[in-house]
Length: 168
Ligand SMILES: [Mg+2]
Image 1 (cartoon, rainbow, N blue to C red):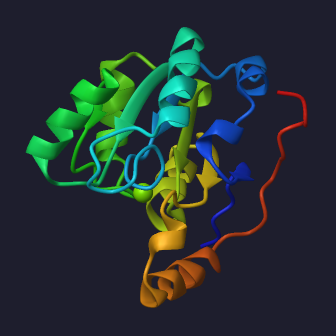
Image 2: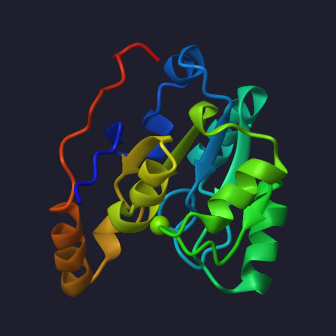
Image 3: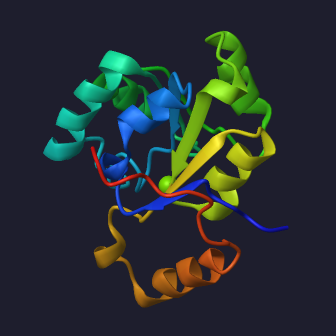
């Protein structure tokens, strides 16, 4: 199995929203930990918070997280004011499919954005969504062993199929 993210970028804020819109994307499914927020922080960083406000003007935002802590995820849903699916069991597709169904979203108008190839990109690929792989937000704060494991995981990834054009 090869994982082929449609796009590989550094940070969510590097996505070209105009380009996604032009491709017919109406909904963005985000992973939470290390994609939108540092793990356990429960808070958005300022730049991402501001960017999300812009995103929301055009796209439906949904969070799909494997985080099983429902209390924490409830707080996150409040902070983000968007639908949040906890314990999403990515790369299993059942919760992602449920999210598509509950919000009347078609797979072909959805992009899945996340930092983990084996969960976020894989679930997106299985559902034939556009996928966007980002670097983990807290990569500079991770232990050597985690850095090593991430490197191993990234070996399953072939280069991005497309790149965003430079205009933003
Ligand atoms: Mg993550």
